[in-house]
Image 1 (cartoon, one colour):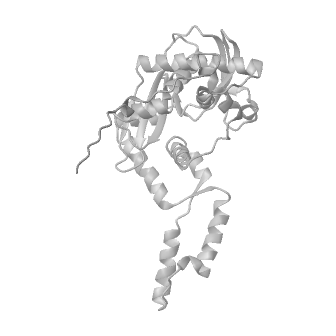
Image 2 (spheres, helix red, strand yellow; image 1 turned 90 degrees about the vertical axis):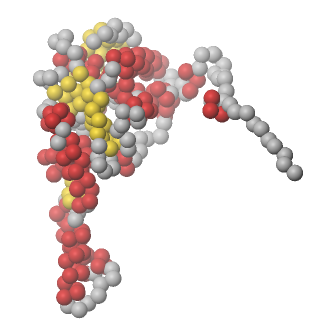
Image 3 (cartoon, rainbow, N blue to C red; image 1 turned 120 degrees about the vertical axis):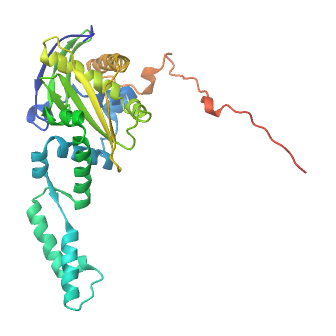
Length: 309
């Protein structure tokens, strides 16, 4: 790891949701660094994080792929079509026509029983489960992707303190999967387009360069044996045919991510020590906070008109 910013580190395992993790308010994560990159004010005073349907699906798929035992404990398959078909079939055999099977007594009793069986688990329907299975099966068909997602420690929280040239900073992160033997960190990303052309744009939009450098550097400090950590993205599309690509960041990708996370950690440390959380003006080069406003290149066009009589 080519890093003069971090002088030493004490990184340890810490399960997500544990008392130590919850108490780690002063520990910044990659998502926190992304908010700092927007502005320290957005990090400190911004609206609470809201989970989008895409994030919910991604978390569900991660659990299905990496932690199948946990998936069974936390999710319940609510397959109402079987019940509806049975209710309609019974009614037809009795010469009855049911327009709204969900309004019947039989359905309501079945639904109540399902809620009891679910015991507060997250409900998913058969269509969602079939999609998760088809996506995972697609990955498993590829020998190298199969190896990457099948061997390692999944979703293990890591927390600790790093001593930097800016002072001591608390950090925390959760790799999707880490393979201690191979020194590989795997991140599975669900996306709309996983092509070689499109995914790099998404990586830039979501600051994946920060994640790759931040995680791999901290894991290297955790292992502390001078062996480099390889970082691998698996980007998989959420629509049929559920195609995917495996990406390994280039040295330039990692170098840019390292440059950004070091600068953002320094800024975070300054804001934390001084209880000063500026907005966009922190990135303005002049003290007045005035930026130049120009048009993007695509908006610079000739404007012609023609009068035809």
